[in-house]
Image (tube, rainbow, N blue to C red; front, side, top):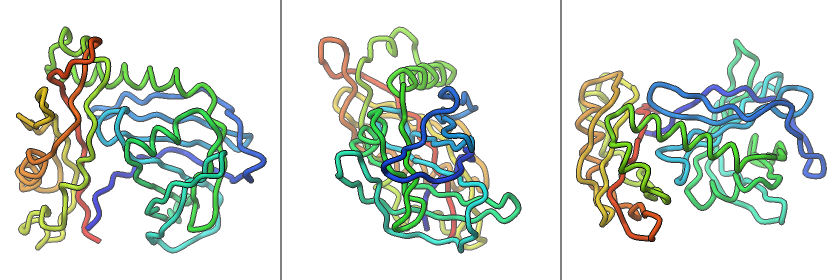
Length: 263
């Protein structure tokens, strides 16, 4: 079982490490119903790189590439690396897909908070399109784009009923990796038996100690059993608590979106 969500963000041709693709359009924040995503087109072929935070943009999430016109390839999972311009590398497990109707290769890779911060630092980086292949981007203006993404996340939280006055006091959001709480045992047996997949969105309330004190399902599809399994798993999660301007830990909220998929 793999837990992933594929956001369809347009991507295209590759470039060498010495020729990173430059932006050809503005950063775009997508205000979706239950999540916020960020993407931008690069180069003359309208190549786009995008991210979909697993919770908040201060944490980790999914980096996504879609490559129109790429060579057909079988769907597979492979060890790969993000390459940074200082020569360092970030090891990831990349999921590579081929969409024949669109003649497009899709690549997704999960990044933890530290890795996401490096990739989104504004410096050139190489995105893995297969085990040893990369496409290079020069993500100018990413700091401003991340501020807009945070505004989207704040609007989303308020729409879920989070008090705007408390949200405004948070200067550093909670940090945590919820994926490690979803082992194979988390998949509901009745959904697994019938081969059902789906998506579940939840809103977590986190206290000043970093403990999850409440889990509320905001959207669910595929099977009703995903609701209970999602919150049963997430209630065990531990976070670095959010902080206010004085550096004090405070109550916070964290949206999570899980995609259930049977391999």
